[in-house]
Image 1: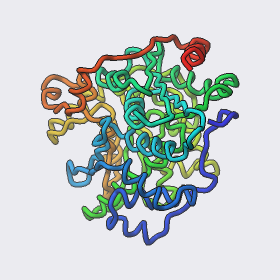
Image 2 (image 1 turned 180 degrees about the vertical axis):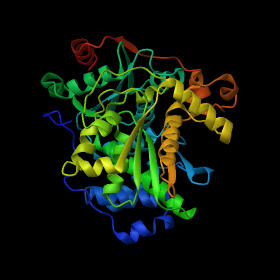
Image 3 (image 1 turned 45 degrees about the vertical axis):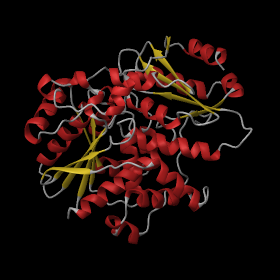
Length: 413
C-alpha cells in the first residue's frame, strides 16, 4: 500500500487482441490465465516462469452450471479453501515467492478477513519460506468452518480475533501500512484485495466463464456478482476494460448497500458495517470502490449504465436460498443466493435476450447455520473440512485499538 494511503493500479490497462477475445472458447482456463496475465505483467516475469506459476496456482476447475435456459451459476469454490479467494491467494503467494530473493528480509503479510479471504490466504501462503501471514478477523462474525480455516494452521500463519467488525480489522491493517515504526522494522504487504496482485487473477474466471458460455451457444452475457469489498466485481470490470464484451454487471449486496445507494442517488456515503447472514459481504466502506471509480473517472455516466446495484436483507436472502433449492435442487450459500436474486430481478425488468451468470463465491458447507434443516441436510461436507475439525485452534484476542495491534506486532516480531 503506498504511503499516500491510495491503492495501486496499472498505469495502462491493455486491450487484448480481437483474435484472442473472439476465440476464447478454444482455450483452457490456464491458457486464458496465462494470456491475460502476460498482457498485464508485460516482461516483469519471463514467459516460462509465468506459465509455471499459472499452472501451479490455477489447478482446479471453475465451471458454469446451467440452472435454466438463460441462467447459469459460476462455481468458484472448487479450490482448496472452498472459496473464490483461492484464485487470488494462490497466484499472489507464488508471485511473491518468485520475487523473494535469498537473504532478503522476511515478508510480513497482513490481511483482514470477513470470512473467506483469510482461509484462502492461509492455505496459499502456508509453508512458503521467508514469509509470515497475520490474519485479523472479527469476533463472532465468521462461520465455524471459516474460523477453523483461520486458526488451525500454525507454522508461518498467525490469527488474531478482533473485538469489532471487518471494517475495524481493515482499518488496523491499513494503518499498519502507513506506520513509520512498523515499516522500519518489518517488510509489510497485503493479501487483501487492496493488493492489485489479488485482482489480476480474479479476471481469469470472467474470461473463462465467458468462454464456457460461448461453447454453450450463448451470447450477450451479464454477470451478477455478490459484492462486499468490491474486489470481485472490480476484477470483472478490469476484464471488461481489457476487452471482454460483457453486456452488463450487477453489483449484488446485502444491507451494507453503500454502492447500490451511490448508483441510484449519485451520493457515495460510507457507513458502519452491519452483520448479516452473508457475512463475507459485511463491508460498509468498500476499499476497491476507488479502483472502479478510477477506471471510470472520466465517464461516471458510463459506469452507471454498465453497473446496476441491488441490495437484500437477511429475510430476502433466506427466501432466495429456499427458492433456489426448491426450483433447481441446488444448494447456494447466502452470498450466492443474493447474486441469483439480483440477476432474476434484473432480468425481469424487461432485460430479455441476455444470458445471466451469477457467481457462487463459496461452498455451502462453510455456512451450515444459514440453512433451514431440510436444505442443510443435503450439504455434502468436503473431506478437508472434516480434517480441520480434529486440529487445535490457535489465535490471539485483541481489541480494535491500533496501539494494541501495533504492540502485538512489535512484541512478536
